[in-house]
Length: 144
Image 1 (cartoon, rainbow, N blue to C red):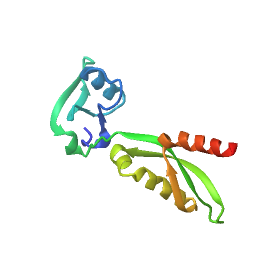
Image 2: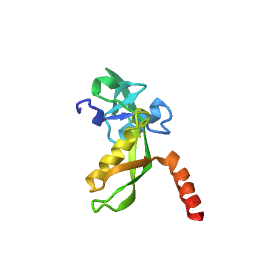
Image 3: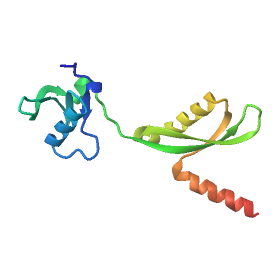
Image 4: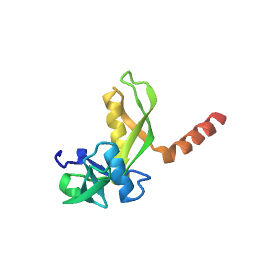
């Protein structure tokens, strides 16, 4: 049997899992030798009669380095400068955790992406919760 690692273990954070039996069946179909159910690692195998069985390995998710942190992906719009000095508006899809969002790190990720493409500071960032307001302000400015 393969070594127990986070790569050989299917985690129950997958949506629509159902029961532990359903999940064990899914793991077997996907060729995962291990599954993580409620942070406990189980080995998954098929008996000669075709029955799928799971056996607790005495390991927890943290023992195999599995640390599932949900992420969000959203569009970040940046007002910045091109290397020529001309103004630019660019956008990137950025994936981040709740903690990264709370610390403003999602903006830093977008700035790094922009710098890697040759854009320059100053950067003014807007996330998806703010872009509608920016568009509305732009429309209001056009009217004047």
